[in-house]
Length: 415
Ligand code: SF4
Ligand code: SF4
Image (cartoon, rainbow, N blue to C red; front, side):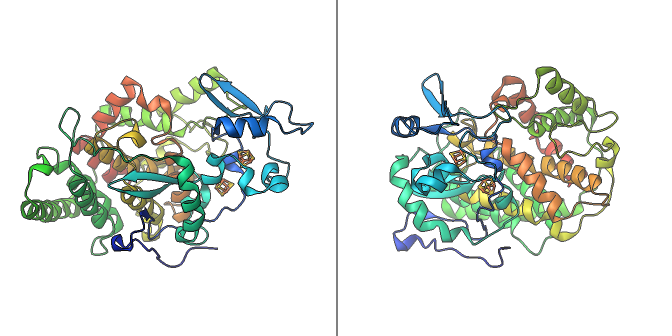
C-alpha cells in the first residue's frame, strides 16, 4: 500500500515524548532483505540464553560470540539461521513476534533520544522505507512505545557545532535544523533548488557560533541566510566538478556502493577490483552489488532533467533524518553538528549518482522515483553504519567533499 497522507501527533503539549516523522510510511513487505545478512543482530544475554536453548535440529549453532557481544549466526549464503525458505522468520512463526530479538523487532525503526524527547529515525536501507510503502509510521507508535523501556535510552548532551567548540543548546539545534528542513519542504522552489539551497544554507552557518546569538538575532540570521542561499541556488549553473573532487567522490561512491553481508562475503580480491573499478571511473560499472547494472560510467554524467517526482524519495529521506536529530553525535560516528549536517547533505549527490546508475540500467533518460528510492536504500545502508567511513582517510574525504564549493558543485552536476 502506497502512503497517501501525512500524519503525526507530535504536539509537545501532549506529554508524549515519542516524536514520529509526519510524512513517512512503512509496513514490512516481508522481502527478507534485512534477514539476509546485511543486518548484524546483536542479542542481549537474556536473548542469547533463550535462543541458544532452542532445540531446532537444522539450527545447530544459532549464535556467534564476537568479543563482548553475541550476534545471530548466518548461513553460508548470508541468510540468518532463523530465516526459512519462504523468507519468514521461524522464531516469529513458531513462538510469536515477541520472542524475536529486540533488534529484529525494532528494525527499521530507530529511536533517537535528543532534546528531551525520543525521536524516530528510520533505516532507509529497508526498501519499504525508501519507497514509503505501507501505513504512516504513526501506526507503529503503540508497538514502539512498548519496546522503549527495554532500550534504556539516555538523553545525550547537545552536540558541539564544530569539533573543539563548546556545546550548542538543544533549542538552537532544533531551530537551525528546522530551517534546513523547511527549505527542503519549500514548494516555492523546485526540488533540485531546495537541496542546493539547503547545502548553501548549512555551509553559511560555519563562521557563526549560533548558540551565542539572541533568539531575535538567530531568527534574522536564519531568514537572511535562507534568502541568500535560495537566490544563489536558483542562479547556479551546472559545471563539472574539478578532478580532485571527482576522484574523492568516486572513492566515496565505491565505499557506499559496497554491500557487506554476513556469510556470503565477497573475496578480498573481488572487493578490491570493484573498488578500483569505481575509483578509476573508466569503462563499465563493476558489480559491487548484484543489482548494479554494468553500464558505462559516462551514462552518469549526462545532462538530462529529472522529473519532479524523482526527487521525492531523496527529499523525504533527508527531511525524516533531519527531524530525527539522528545525523550527528553517537548516530554518526561522534560527529559535531555541522559535520553531521553537511555529511547528510552529501548523501544527496551520492544518491543522485546511484539513481542515475539505476536509470541507465533501465534504459531511462533520467531517474524516476523508483530509481531514486533504490539509490536512497544503497546510500543509507552505509551512512552512519559502515565502519570504514570512520577511517582517517575517509574522514579527510568527507571534509574535502563537504566544503561549500565541492558539495554545491557535486549536487549541481549530479542532482
Ligand atoms: S528489509 Fe524492510 S521490508 Fe524487507 S523484510 Fe526487512 S523490514 Fe521488512
Ligand atoms: S531472527 Fe528472524 S527477524 Fe531476526 S534476522 Fe533472523 S530471521 Fe530475521
